[in-house]
Image (cartoon, rainbow, N blue to C red):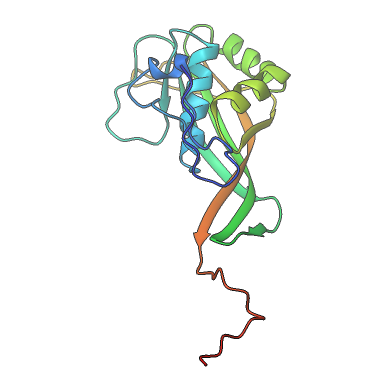
Length: 193
């Protein structure tokens, strides 16, 4: 069941929840409109694309490496695409900053090359755009880079299978600032008589 809790004028749907993502893990919850919600949405997309695959966030401490195939998502870059777009209303200012986000997706163990190839192909497909439009706000997939193998030597000095693909998304960061206004016509001067 889809949720929609919009906080911006015009009802853009800033919080949406994928029914698949709700049961996908402890961190998937509602996909929100903050920039930190993009990685949550990306994790939910991977879980929908590869049912049963454990998907974790990279650069976290004290995680035990899973015994089965898994994926790690690591944020890499955040680049401004243009100057802010602003609009005004009687109650506030809406500022939108388009941002290009790059995430590195690492697939580990058996089937990792296949999963990376599938992600690289489908992330460029209309289905990915449809998924992000349905379950997120202000986020669209742009493209995926080429798949490549990345060396991984485990604690036993043995090579393990690891395939990597970078995915890029556009996120439109929306900030609504309240401002004071009046409902009086400034051209009318009231005179106490």
